[in-house]
Length: 421
Image 1: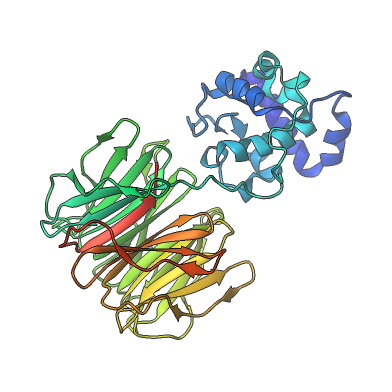
Image 2: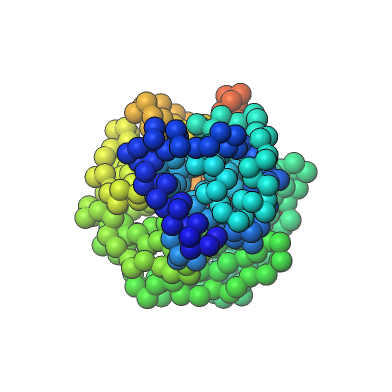
């Protein structure tokens, strides 16, 4: 996009904030108000060479190079803080609103070359543009575990085919104590606490089949446990320090940068942590000194955290894991003093929790990991025999499968899981 066109887009965005009616009335007759995905792909090819997660630092983001104030004024915050952190579909949905208001001229020569003004097709006729798009459910899961030899192993599931690849070492490095993992684009990022109590990262690209090798993330020592989530393409890594407090650190992989490690909350005495995301808000959970579960919520757009508050009053919990299913409900799991798995479901829109209830009569579990699959979940647990077990919960049907072995390998100390890349 030329500098002149960028200036025009910026002015239109500012005008839209206070003079929306005037902007709309100035749109010429016959201005395009919709375009097919194929046409938006042509615009993206011109604007960003088809890179929907691009952030070059020039003030314009994503495949369609949308200016940040424009993104905000047309409702982009419902999807992500920045355009490049949203999905392709979400970027197009906001671009449709810009197109309807400002016309194809907002994309200058790229809009002309793509034929944007002459295409009036609805790109997503079955999608409500006011609601966040529901991502496709991946049939694959990447499961990682620290073995008895302190190496990290990976095992990949294809639930459509009903198969597992089997456990293989991710990296020959030894000395790891705990792992957590997250998918970002085509890559899976595996973080692990080393023998020196520092945090390391390995990045795997399942399309190319390559791993980067473990590298130090932060020189700070004394970490007991880590958990990771992603808001768009930004990774939010949380670590439980030797002081029983929770620290946070964020990575923008488009920029190739990490923020400094910062205290999330001054509350001390926490034993275990986990995190998930609803919208752009991070939901952080921690088991306190009283063995109860606490929750703090981080709004990264506003730069604020709520204080930790109790999630129910049940005590005796040892381990905790959380995920968010497609309808926006948090699924919180905890191992009780009886070594059974309990579930509590949080609806943050309504401000309600279902209360903890036991999932299965099976006892002897030591640690949990969970991934979403639409309205269902894949729950993993290390059993009393140090093997990994899997149970699948279908919340739409209200059913759970029994726990079943994932391979026969034993000796696992800690596991994590993330949806497939």
